[in-house]
Image 1 (cartoon, helix red, strand yellow):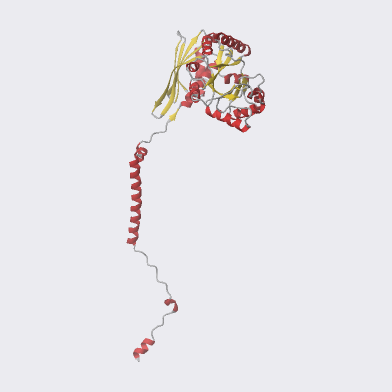
Image 2 (cartoon, one colour):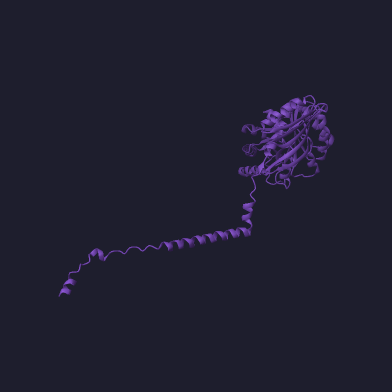
Length: 405
């Protein structure tokens, strides 16, 4: 009885204790650390494998050990000094005759620039001291420096070293020449058909010691090369835009035809401009039919204006509307006043050139067009000294346009 009574008097479990959730068993700290080590070792193995792969490919050492400093390119500044030099002499009216004696690409550490040795003959009626002061001021305004100056008074020679950031970019020898007269008139000559014609005569035109405007037909194998060459030689570059004539076939890529949709005309003009990025202006190749069409010329000239360039009407048609439309668009525009070599005869070309020079002396300026022909080259080579002595200065077309505007 006593035993039974004790058993009957034991406490009865409460309902809550019957349904108590057992506590979550936490992993032991040692097991957690082991898991982390495994993950870390796995990631480390992946990184090592990737590194071995890069080493095997040769990329990692190259990137790690061959890091080169950024190249500092001074070509743009050098070109600005070219323009500053020409502008200073032109503003003086010194009628400079410039010959490139030497031209080289230079490098020093991470610096890259172009060096030019120029021989410049100027009229003896303007003192070399004035040339020195004008060049110094113009070069400094362009961000350059005059590194040294030497004058040999007896020889009528002034030697100047120009540069930027201590780098010598120009060696300029100015020589006082009694055969050169002060500027009385500006004569701009455009030589057409570069790109389509690439021969010794074309190369000789680029070597002429005068300012020329080189008109390049886009789309030919040598078009871009000759544009760069002409630009580097100090000449101005035009796009010689093929446009439909009244008779004959053009045979040129992406020519401007009068029956094309307007958007296609615009696309072809944009293509031509993109092909010759050195170009500052455009003149028409043929185009006696296209330049008479107002709708065609409006589309062409609007695209030229949008590109920030100007237009010269070659005047292959006396009924051309190009200058009228350009006036409405406020686009800088001029027209050629003479074809020098409409007859491929040296005597005829000389007469045309003399007449064009007389017109320039009378009006202050003139624009003429020639072509890559041996007779045209010969006539120019013989007449350049004579015309310079008369005070006729050969300039880029842009110079004439600026003066007229």
